[in-house]
Amino acid sequence: VYPDHHHVAEEIYIPLTGGTQWRMGGGDFRRREAGEVIHHASDVSHAMRTGNEPLLALYIWRGGPLAAQSTITGS
Image (cartoon, rainbow, N blue to C red; front, side):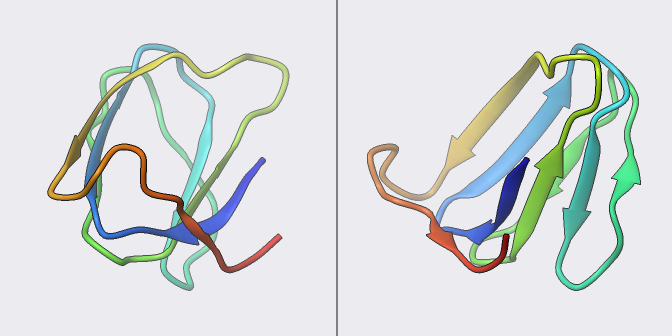
């Protein structure tokens, strides 16, 4: 589990494996499949969790320093 968090940078994920669950804002976790585009806008809270399969993904971190810490807002 990568708990609810946010950061200045915008993120775009393209999972290469399926089955990971993603959440944005106050919504519920939703299973996403390989090849789906997942967009997290700047400072929007989001989280992800895996089950039996690991997550392998391409991602773009845009508009903020890569070394910046995320602000964890949940568990």
